[in-house]
Length: 260
Length: 250
Image (cartoon, rainbow over all chains, first blue to last red; front, side, top):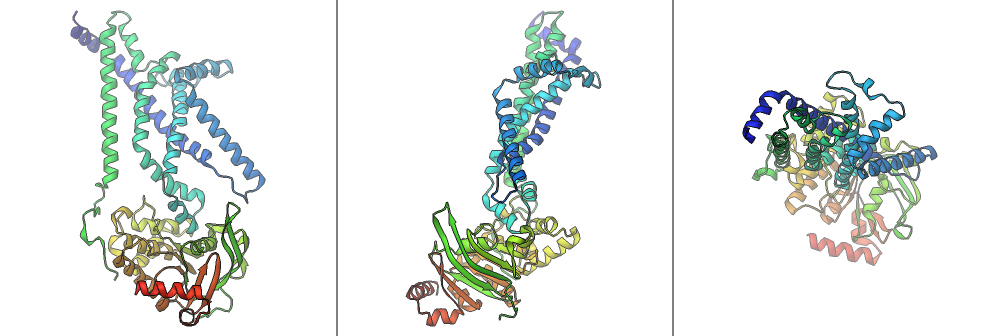
């Protein structure tokens, strides 16, 4: 059989394997990125927390503990390869009595998937924390001052003014993290999770058409990442130009309106 | 114009230093009464902006007290106090992620807990007052500097402040935009709004203010009516500065 015939054979006979693998990869990447972003925002806030002079002793202590926790979390999860983390969580979890298989609730969301989701989410949260933090630091100081001068609390300002701007500034980097997750979720096959990469061995273990299998999977990865890149580029461009805003007046000469 | 018996804000002997040794304010005392329009003048670096920031508590004075209706602000809820003392900045500081109308609504909803309908009505009323009612859905990036500053004033007004502090509100604007912002401020003054304005606009200080404070090097050198400070101030430093600036802006 020629390579093209092998590819055709795999697609027609084992197509569902690849589709299931693709679904698993997408779920890992999407959940990992979104929940990781959400956790990352909290971690960024914790790491950015400032101890103020007139804080009570307990408040000061809590703030310092929070900051130390966030710093350790970020450094540890960024400093170890995800493959090692996956093994440590999977076997380490089992050693301390976490039964991953009992946490699974369907054939798709089985124990491996739950463990994989946990690892990719927590791993992503560490990267997202730094992305969000640098986005927050990039927001002009005047935004915080203006909100505080109006009487808004620190948290009200952060949620309503700072975080939305930080996320907008970081959109390309957040999108990049999603692309990384699409690809890096492949390492989670070490714990027995059948995602897109692992679907090749399942599809080729009887026919030995590995090259054809990996070509199929490579093309699927490429299509996913390219589509994501295009989507992010379009989203960032849209935000930058404000073209979605029907009231956009970039070239409106009447912008210098008179006072009534 | 000092209609109130006691001042709305009383600043008593405040000092502010940064990093322990840069003394920006040395010993400042003055009162803001209801209906006052106080122009605060002085050379760059004299501590004018720091003084306003201390009043709004964006900076905490290292010494001295500030009283709001005879209560030390240290004993008040900071955020509720701030909602009574609005501030307008040189760099406008509109929330970039919010439209003009949302800029005016957000603080009302979060701080004063007004309902949507009331907040919207009040925002519209104040935007109309500053001549911005035709641009309410624009993002700050799509309006001019003068328009941004007028929106910032409207946003502060939405909180029904008792005092409005202006920190060089026109310094970043060209003459045309400056006049549009000064017009709004004159309008507010004529409506009896209590204001303290750090400015280099001598004409405005002379025409609108009822009190003029001249600061230099962290001290108040003159605090009187504009006529008296301009015409019969004994301090040579004040005279030189005011007349030089006045001739320039004429």
